[in-house]
Image (tube, rainbow, N blue to C red; front, side, top):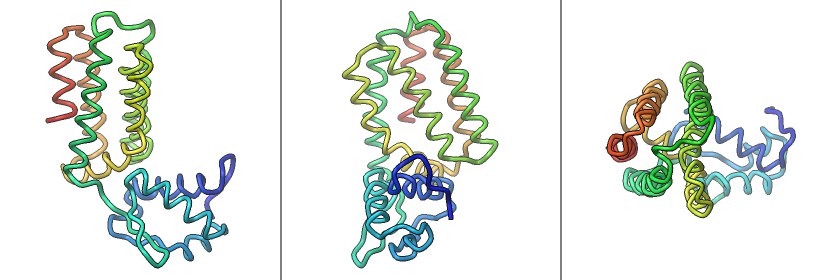
Length: 206
């Protein structure tokens, strides 16, 4: 049984299932049955039900009658909408600082690039999602607009579903994802507003 330590039982179950789904250990279309999961994790069906509801809010599963749910993939329209919202908010933040980056900013970006490349080497989609979110979160936080930052982070929960869906739809892999962020970081370092805006648009909307 997976270790369920340091977090609530529903969160521990959710995190374990989330990793399996994002890493394609549980494929799209697979059924997740409450009774089977409760037996595997040695927890109540109420705990399983809460974990599945949380996964549904992230767009990773769809709840169905008769106490099971199905692993889903975000469709192209929803993915496009999430990307456009994230791009719009991020661009607004980046315009605030693109020619005057905060101290230590480049080192922090490099750490996240290294984390993405390590995730690619390990074929760990969950780790890539987390590094991607931190990388772009740095771009938004540097704008020092708290409300904008809060709005941007409301999309965090959907990024796993978005990335898993996008990788499959585009027939790409985590190495491609890491390289795209290396390219974006390089252009950001140019401090050229037009190039940075074009690069962000390409990154999100191409």
